[in-house]
Image (cartoon, rainbow, N blue to C red):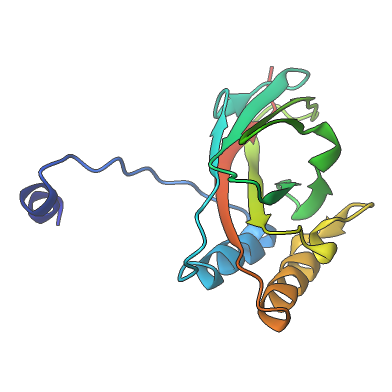
Length: 162
């Protein structure tokens, strides 16, 4: 398959395996459901894919084109946190800098999800932590019910260790 890809597209693919926890699977289902969206995806970059406990996770968002961005952290237990209060906007781009801590010897998978839409999504603007399996179907239902031109992208990183 690799050889055929190289022959067809004349580039080496950048393929990586990211193991997520069972409780994070709702994110994968959500991203798959939005896969056919014609809305432009936001660009999301993280400072590192491994963050030690107590370090800051820095990130940037681009390709926002005046759209509202909802940004969420999904931890290894499938709990979702709203990171929107940490976003600093600058025209078509945004950035964030969040100090994260987790007491574990072994780094565990975490995800940052950026969802863009013309006016933001009410269901994504959570005040309190909520389970991914509860939240992401609600966000998708709002997108479908209101026929919102939404798109999403996700980045994976590991948190923990010393």
